Every structure is written in structure tokens, then in C-alpha cells.
Image (tube, rainbow, N blue to C red; front, side, top):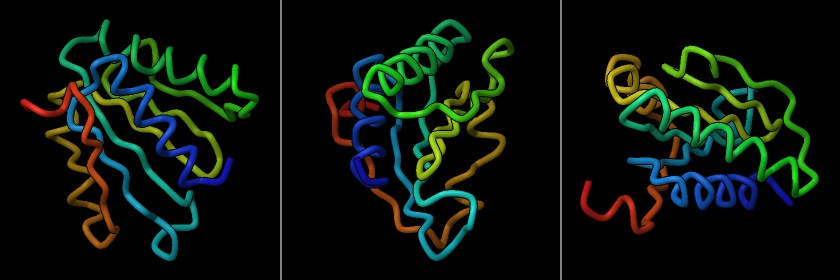
Length: 120
């Protein structure tokens, strides 16, 4: 699975867990950290943890190495390092505060058009 396919896979998992405002930033040529950032948020600590846990478990079951996961216990900003893709699962308030999409405004963006994002 290449980076773009992995980012799409992660977006689908997040959507299945009712994550909100799911966005992928194409970081190729912009950052050396990763090829793609997937950013989403939940409205509660439990939802943030549920989204992050399901992403971690689903990619692991698909044979993808989860290099590191940080911030799970506090559930404010969970970072999941999948190599070519870095996933940021925010609590809504923290996403508004850090504004990663604005910070990386030069990166092409793709919004996920899943069910849970239609009425946001």
C-alpha cells in the first residue's frame, strides 16, 4: 500500500468511527517528516481515543507497522506515526487552537466526503 492509499484507508477508518472534518494534507515536497498528514477530530476524550484506537488496530491488522502513538492517555492530540502517513486525531478544542491546516497552508488538501462529514 503506497502513502496515498494508506491515507485514504485511514480516512475511511476515521469516518467509520464518526471522526469529524477529516482532511488529508499532501506533504510531499513540503516536509521531510511524512508524505501525508491525516487530520480529524472528535468531540470528546472517549471519541478521540476510540478513533485513534481503531486506526491503530485496523492498520496493524492490515500488516502496516505502527511506528509510534503519542498522546492517547490525555486524548487531546493523538499522533499516530505510520511512516509515510502521520495521523493527527484531535479533540475539537485543541484542533481549533493548533490549526495544523493553517500552519501547513501550502500543502494541497483533500477533504473526506464520507457520511459523518456531510452535515458538519
